[in-house]
Image (cartoon, rainbow, N blue to C red; front, top):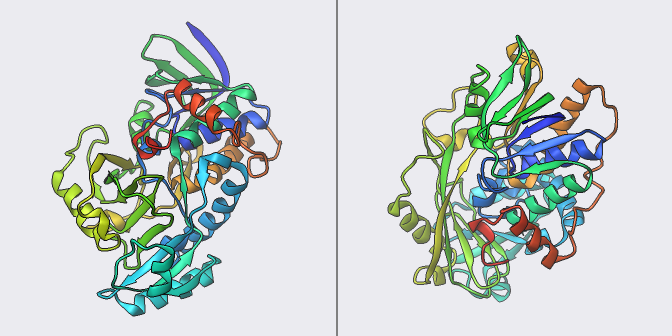
Length: 403
């Protein structure tokens, strides 16, 4: 079987679904394929933090500014896909007070709203907070439910004409001379397309390689641990340079503890280390002591789709969490292919907009982006959102206790 579409999007995580939606809203015919259920890669295996930008303010201010913008947009357009909790950046007794001051100044410079509470006042708001919390920076962090977000985005794309095909793995991209012409799927069918968007995340290099293109991907695994601690209403971040076990993301009757950062060669084949889990629990318990002896509901790992064409040293934490839109016509002399890599769940809409702007230009489409202003499908209907999650097989461990 052979079908034709204007644009084939490979990868049904948040970014791929976002690209499909943005293109569809601009009147482009789109087919979206994913090898498993939607969001089954990095999207559904995150810790579910809706970034305020504070985490990046002192290291990559541009990333922080993007997070501030997209945080506000998602609060307006994503409804029950997000939860407004606020966030604390916590200085414990052993933490460097100068770093806390640097974080405050960086947040103010990057436009991240921030205020300060002393430890006693912070514990009145979050009684489970560590007794040696000396002060906290209050920022507009929140929680995003990845399964609902990707399902709502895909449903919106479908309502505007996109064909959504989960469980449709790509065998390889097809080419004709110096142009990508589509892809063959594992079921033997072919999708011909005027343009292909490679939004396969940590697997983007594998997709690109089928067309002879090399990508400088450096996937890193991160361990997440969900434990049964109830009553936490605020995202807790350790106010220190990024390290293992420095974030607690609240759900209704549990919290997600994260995370680690270990580079892996194959995003499908890596060790799920018990030592990583123990380290995450131990470190996060410094912020939230009740986590130390809480029941572990589940553990899972996500693989970050990090891209770095430059040397980043010995620590993969040095790779930017910014995103890249790669035009392979300019980069590799191969027309008809665009790759989007890197980034964060919080900025998925912005990543999709930047990708769609490029693709639209290549296709001669001059319609503007509308995704910052139009709410997602079923955004205000949790029951319908969860039905869409089931329909698209989009359920992941990050928010399994919410649905």
